[in-house]
Image 1 (cartoon, helix red, strand yellow):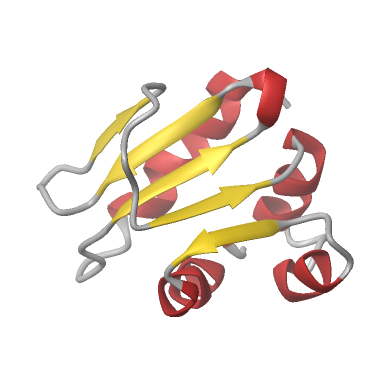
Image 2 (cartoon, one colour):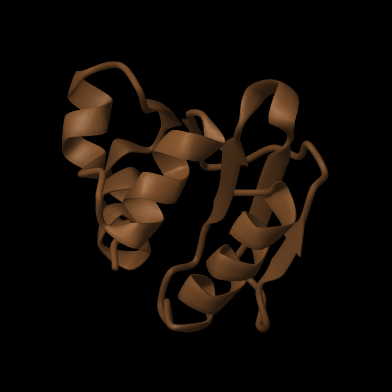
Amino acid sequence: MSLETITDKIKQKMSMAAGLSAKVKFNFGDEGLIYVDTTQSPPDISHEDKEADVTLSCTTQTFEGILNGTQDPNIAFMMGKLKVKGNMGLAMKLNAILED
């Protein structure tokens, strides 16, 4: 899955995430990153490396699995496939938003 496809899916998911007021970074290493600022409406989504409340780091393959429901984010985290830096409570909220 390409970074652009993932960006489109995140845009769809975040449009349904009313009440989430945070800055989130999805870091895919060499494949790029996606920054989402839901403190404004509509959310600002870019590929800029800005300061975030929580950063989720994984491969695009792992993230694709989370988005399509074949990879449980909690198991990915416990196996070290998904790393979380920052607000863990916010990461748990994102878990519910991102899962299909």
